[in-house]
Image 1 (cartoon, rainbow, N blue to C red):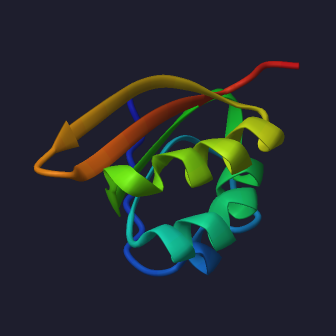
Image 2 (cartoon, rainbow, N blue to C red):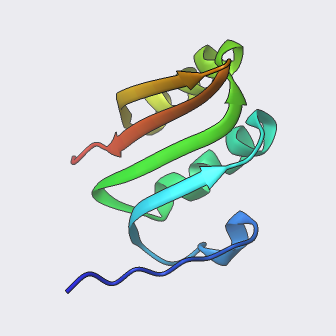
Length: 91
């Protein structure tokens, strides 16, 4: 059985909870500010998908995700819009 919970709103909706997959689709500045909360809300080995930003923003996002301990799995670009797929490293 798969339990899927959808929260629409800001990152405060997920703080203090654990999820196996988080999808965040918003601009680069909000994503960067909220990355620590996404990380803390992910189970070890969990999936984080970030979208809603331009390809030119990728390096800035990768710098912060690497420091947190997120491993980049895939990158998809469509007309300069970008989606990055990460897994939370198991320590």
